[in-house]
Image (cartoon, rainbow over the protein chains, first blue to last red):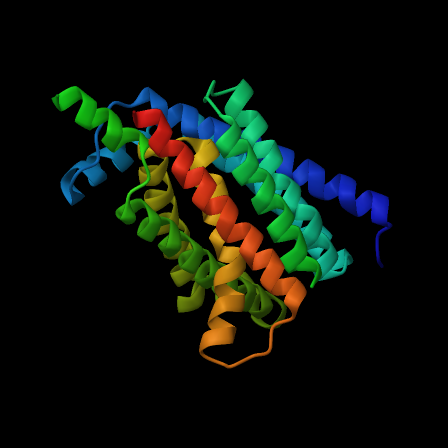
Length: 126
Length: 132
């Protein structure tokens, strides 16, 4: 059974928003740590401290929800259409970085992100 | 001076980070492929067949390694930098098919690839501006 165009767009949007939330949790957890990864040894230490944080497991749980919605869409929509709608993810990720992580996004980065959205959209439909 | 160097190290995109991001794209492809194959086994043999399949464990290992590399990248750069640059995975497959398989690629697709590369260059440049 194929879904309507509007419901595909809404579901992809939902999946992308939830994915942005998941990445925000992960980045927040990483920002809590002050381990500088410089070698394999520090990398192991970093990962071991990271998986002890509840935020990381929350991020996993949320990302499974996002992935489930995405797989549901993929089984019921045309692939190229679903992937072209997925180009929205870069906008939601940028907005999450801006509002929840207080990252500074200058004009250069915004133009770059916009160009990537256009590019991914074009590659998906062609 | 050391602190400025550290700042630069923390914010700007380096070749290593680029390579790390490329490897996450590769691992994601491997994980997806293995999970799909393992999921197909569920229909024929049930959960036990899936759990005893090396493909399933390869997929899990890929996801874990992916998590380690992605987290390390996120400890070095902003989320609003890592995510756009990871979009290069959209063009690695078309580029590989062009270079190694001699596949014909439409003008529209080239345009899309161009937009992605241009965007990635701008996002990478935006990290350099911060360090100054």
